[in-house]
Image 1 (cartoon, one colour):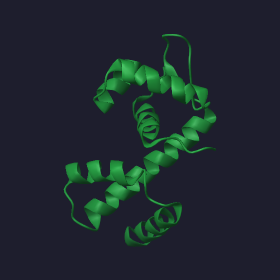
Image 2: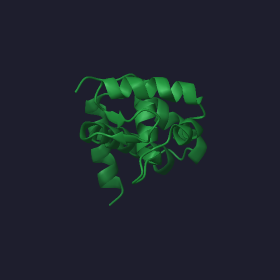
Image 3: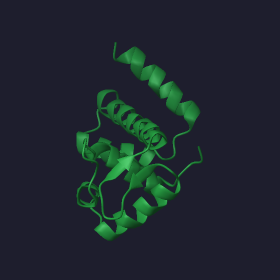
Length: 124
């Protein structure tokens, strides 16, 4: 699957975090990210074009299978990085959350794999 921009990754992760059995609402995504509903609508259109989400006009937003897979991977990266920053480096939770959000977009796959291996050993 082609890479998407860090901004679209944030939107996809936000959808993953706020979605329930009735889908995700634009308002909930906007609130979660602290952005306007217009920004969410623009991102939703781009994610739909890439086949990562589906939405009937003005209806709830659902992740496609590939969208859910990608969102889970983004969320997992975020959580592992945040956990490393807090548990290993002693960074406070708010700073770790913000830094994880930034790092998750630029970390290489190789480094991320090593970080996962390290965290799995450390957290046993």
